[in-house]
Length: 260
Length: 266
Image 1 (cartoon, one colour):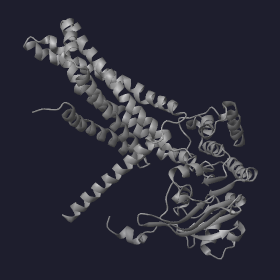
Image 2 (image 1 turned 30 degrees about the vertical axis):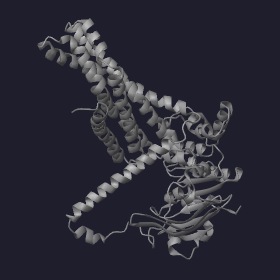
Image 3 (image 1 turned 90 degrees about the vertical axis):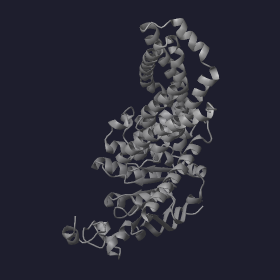
Image 4 (image 1 turned 180 degrees about the vertical axis):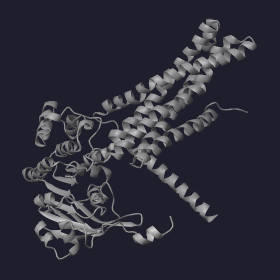
């Protein structure tokens, strides 16, 4: 029994220590910005993290939008409300699926890449050599990746939502023959700017901060070996995915209010 | 200003239960080449990282250029490091930058020099290590020895007051090794620098070092010029200087006897 208590205590202390180190990395990375030359570093990371994630985001979005239209049409056609498929798909995407699926894809594509890159730089002494040159790697390496993740996540979510709605329109209107006026008109009338689009974007921004923070910290704190980097990369994807799903529940509870 | 660039007193540092330094004392005089030698695993690289402020010791004084390194703030530490250089054993080149950009990196970050001047300086530094013609190559296209020379060019880009060399001769062919030996000596004299060299290559290191320290079991066991150390009264120091396999410095990592291990349970 005592042994289990001790192990539990060690695990808890390890977590508290990691949280403290993660806070330090996050704070020191963002402190003192912006400086000369930061914009070039940031733009390079926006390209690496955001632009290079576009393919997986667009393909997944189109596929999910198309499937939602198919499923929505099948159910709604039974009660003769197939024109509502546009509104239904839009609400599901803007409020939930857009931010959540983009977050999960972002963690898998960009988060893991950031962790592996920083971890490898650590393992090959590139971060140490930067420190010894009087250049702070938290500012030079970590901060641009952190900011780029925070900036790109809402943009990728907006693109995901647009493409998914486009995919649902192609399936719903062009293929299944839903009336275009009803499809788009229902969406226009039913979707609210703040309640649906705004709050979805807030979720996406929060996910961007959390995923980027986890990714840079796991890379920076990784054990500088091949196995250490592998573990860190896995942790980034697992922790980010769990964090996105858990935060989605909490944010939905807080933002969409009264469920009684 | 004292005559010593680095003064270390009573340094203690441990990793878990393992004591790395147990009251180590050491000084590095200005303008001289000091060599740090000792059996593998005695913490020579760790000592360089402590001097550079990358690792904080458990106790003891580490004074570099008059500054108490363990008690410096993060900002003060980065300021101090602008006058320091360190050549890493792994070279530590930035893999996403070309040879030219690697050497230009510290100049671009720490100075406002125009591009033309940075170009001239980078070519001068690369020329001094014989790799001006390799300026457009990427680090993945370099051999281990070439990477070390590029790293040296990058280390001296800002003409630091003090350079720490971590195993600079490892993996070098005889020609490159000879060039590196004369480069370290030449740089130290022409730029009035101070050098601290960690190396296992006794002959090369002894040929350029003004003074040497031999550390073992967390303490300095011998110090002086290479000639003094070769005739040192300690058998441990002499064994290391002559590279003898038999002697008080154990070849084996501490363990049970071989017989116990072999006959014991799996």
